[in-house]
Length: 524
Ligand code: GLC
Ligand code: MG
Image (cartoon, rainbow, N blue to C red; front, top):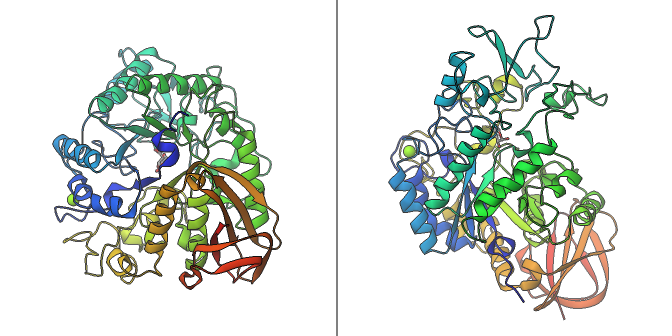
């Protein structure tokens, strides 16, 4: 049997670099900081890190507005720091994935400065420039992230440019072959330096309709929804050309060996998500599955989604699961601290690659920001949707700077009692639960790569079996606050639970679950 690739068995840990570890006291995390804390990751038991953008950037979208794809922003350190980080990670058996932001650049990128300088500039066509509609307004009805017109007027050259996000994040024109080759070369640049893959930012947005057809209006839009949901993105997202480009991007990383991996953010329905794997596994290996970020948290709904998702995957495609990221309220705030423990078991025992957001392993919650502490531009554009709360710095200990910084942290710190040092040696802690789950995955072929079979359960209990060379495991999760019971035709022993005093308990005939309790049982 061929060995499965590392990223199928492994767990990927997502670092938001501004917030993980600050080495120089400026209050912002950096690459030497990550290097200094790598042992946390090996101790925890993850296999790879994905680091949000560290490229030179004016910071309008805190790094997702890139001004140079092949350099390091001095805020985060130097290219030598990156080389050292990659080497040190590899020495520890950890892979390093970088964030790649191909859809748009910063408006300060030299490409856009040139493109904007005049209609005859050789880089004009590197971005999506269009004449106004006959009435002088935007060329189409397309809307951007904040629900505004996606077209930005440029007075000096008398045309609109297309941008889905901020005015300062113009979309590249991926129909232009020069753009394609320049951008694909930026991947090669990092692959040459030894990175193990990339997380691709908003891949589904790369190409727009060249006939400029209007998007249909979404009749189900309600006030209070994300503003961009007011349209169906028929002509701006997930175009056939975008899917072809996904395959081309994959070919580039394959030039560097078959153990490189691509994760991609795709804001599309699951059938389309599944399609990005490619018909022959020649697309994106990990099209990020965001269902758990948004799903109604009940057993029947989650069970149904797992079944649907596994059913739509093309043959050979590998699933993946995300419970938190830098754009979404934290799981411990969404579900509460008790249910967040249950969710951790779910994330780390479902079939597929889990992506773990930094700080979720200690149960960090959203940290509210006062108006004068707001850093995320989205907070002003879409009231109530600012992403600062989930980006609060990692709490390493209970010192004033949380062990994160000796200076003033760039965002406010959360509850001092929630920190790595306090949880490291506490067997009942969230951190200990994560470490045990990660160890279980590593030791158990059934958990990391085995078969999945749903188990009938009542009420708010979600149950499934995982089966592999090491035998059979039952996972039973009570997603609600009321007590639950699962009738069993099997017997076994509790391997671990959200409540540590159940370790070793014999199970036979039925399994009782307290509210918000999750249990992993090793079957006889
Ligand atoms: C992605 C990133 C988000 C960013 C946006 C624009 O959604 O995850 O943080 O603001 O792209 O680049
Ligand atoms: Mg710093």
